[in-house]
Length: 95
Image (cartoon, rainbow, N blue to C red; front, side, top):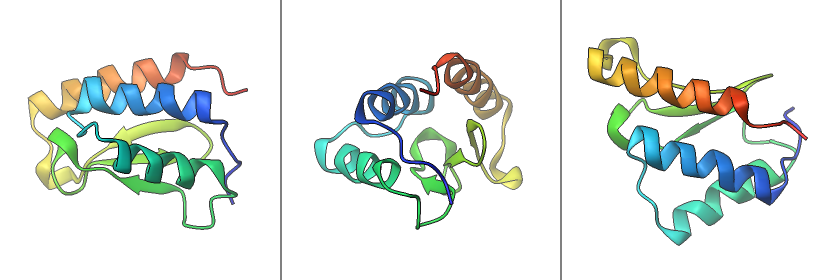
């Protein structure tokens, strides 16, 4: 199971998903994401947000925070988005 993540950190993660990966920034989706991260992740270790990464655009909470997409959907542009997002996620303190 994943660890509960405080809302301040989930807001930072959310901002990265929106700014780097084209995630739609609406309050209902943000609340749902924060709820997912705020619990003992009983829903698994990934969150499908899609955004500009296509249907397989996911945020992973599996020991490190990262994003990815389905290999068949990866393009050079999406690869750049993923690299930028993952670099920013790695800089967010985990506590």
